[in-house]
Length: 96
Image 1 (tube, rainbow, N blue to C red):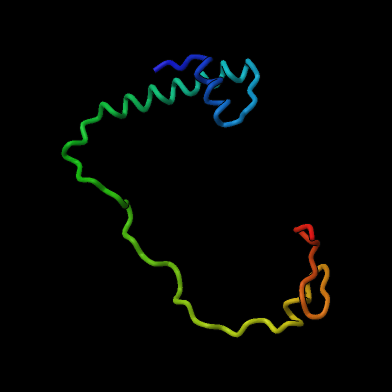
Image 2: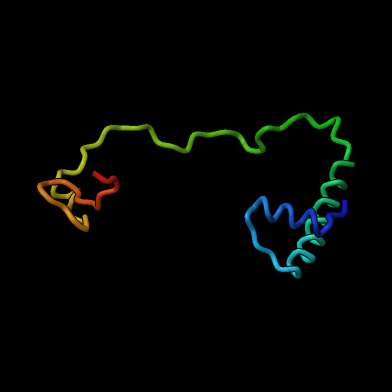
């Protein structure tokens, strides 16, 4: 499948990319080659291959959640760039 340079410009616009004319030509050739390869893969007969949602067996790699004591106020504020009266001090976001 051959992509035109205009199609590449359209995709670049959708992706909010600014491409030079050299890049448009280069990507048109590269993307066309990728689409050609995808078409070749579609020709492979997979009718006897069962659907395989996962190649590897599933295993939970996360540990169980166990409550832990939190930081005390002094430790929590120890690396804060600014604090006041036991709280993090940040620049106001909303106008009053």
